[in-house]
Image 1 (cartoon, rainbow, N blue to C red):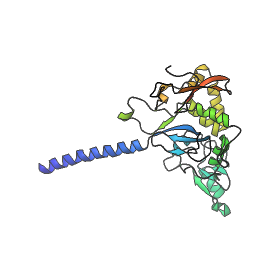
Image 2: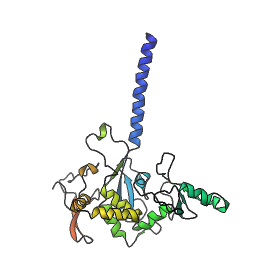
Image 3: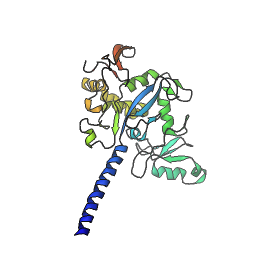
Image 4: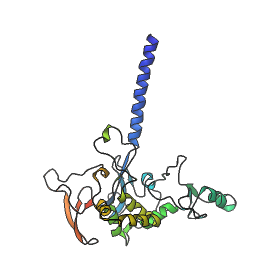
Length: 279
């Protein structure tokens, strides 16, 4: 009886500890990415440098993290030209290759010494190689840097800087990971695959083919455009305050010359809207 009781207590204790470990692991894998502008050169990348900020753990990335790379269109193989089939990228060739074409191209001769890396891991998830260096030698990073409106080599804005700011103003924060625990019962996380603003921000920046799909989606009707201007509340996991401790509104008006109208931006979160919410 004593042995049975001790075994029962230990089994319950191990199950509880396993649940806590699993809960902590799920919590550590949560991310909530948003795009910001470093207006004060706080991160030493120049005034006005765009970056990705994880609101869960405070991580800062200059290039797309893995959670956001997963939302982009898979590259096309440069050899067989099969859409969304690339598994490798070669820095020497500056091209993408699928598994079969990689063996054909880099299977023998001097090309075996080419500098290449995998795009996905064993489970099919996008590999995270960090921010890397500027300028980069990898095709995926070169394409990202060329499409953005900021030059991270000279630390100065480019000609399309204002267009990039407009995309960032319409970017909906992206939540990934398991948010089904008790901390997320009151506010649901963002559905990364159902946000039109996310598709617009990434597909137009990284893929011409996906960009055409997004343009057709945004031109489908006034309801879609209203979603881009005023995203649903369940897409916003973190809600900023409308007033400070002195009762002064945190929303300030400015004239958007690109749109030809007055708009509002939040002094803390830098979110830009056409109408001030709840006011």
